[in-house]
Image 1 (tube, helix red, strand yellow):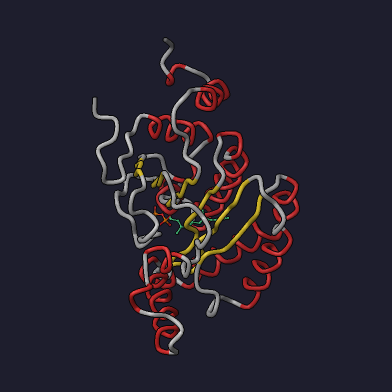
Image 2: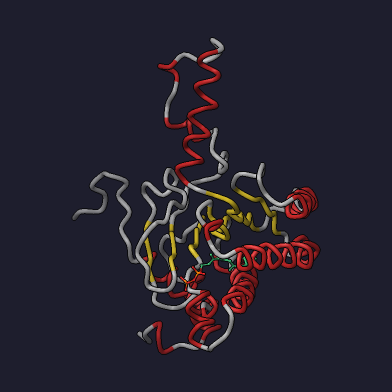
Length: 256
Ligand code: FPP
C-alpha cells in the first residue's frame, strides 16, 4: 500500500477521512512558535502572530472535512500578560481583526464560536467583539470553535471550586454530591466532550496550563513545525498518528 507520506495534500486528507479507525471528535491545539517563525525571518514578533492567524484560518476551514466537531485553540493565556505591552496590544488587535472580519464567513461555514477564559479584565473593545461573535454564530452546528483567551487551566479549576463552595456554603449542595461530572459542569467547557487529541507545535512538550482537567485522557501529539507553517496536511498527519493510538482510559482494551 502507498505510504501516507508519498501522497499529495488533498489525497492524504481524503485518505484520513476514508480510512477506518477512530477519528478525533475534539482536537485542541497549542499554537506555539509564532515568535521564532518571525525571528528566523528578521521580522517583528507580531508578524509571526499575523502569520499564525492565517494558519488558524486554514485549520478552521479544513477541520469539518476531517471529521472534527470541536476545535479548541489556545490564543492567549493568563500568563501572556507578562509579554511586552506592544506585543500584548498587537495580539489583541489581531484577534479583534480576525473576529470582526471572519464572523460572517464563520457563520456561513456553520462554525459556532465560543471564547473560554476570564472575561472580566479583558479590554472593553475585545469583550464587545467576542460577545457579538458568540451571539451571531450561536445557531451554527457544523464545527464548534473554542478560542481560549485569557485562559488558565488552574484558574478555571479554582473558579469551579469556588462556585461549588458557595453553593455548599449556602446549603444548596452537599459536599458528598460533588462528583467529577458536577465539577466539570462548572468549567468553561461545560457540555462539551473532552479533547481526544492535543496538538502542540514548535517542538515544545508541555501543557502550559492548558485544559488541565479536560486533558486527563487525551492523546498528545507534538510536532516541530512552527505554528505559522502548520498546514492542512500537518493536521491530517496528526490525525493519522491518532488513528494508530490505542486509547485505554486506564483499562486494558484490545490486548489479544
Ligand atoms: C505562541 O507563540 C502563540 C501565541 C502566544 C499566540 C497565538 C495567537 C495567534 C495564532 C493569533 C491569532 C489567534 C486567533 C485565534 C485568531 P509564541 O509567541 O510563544 O512563539 P515563540 O515560542 O516562538 O516565541
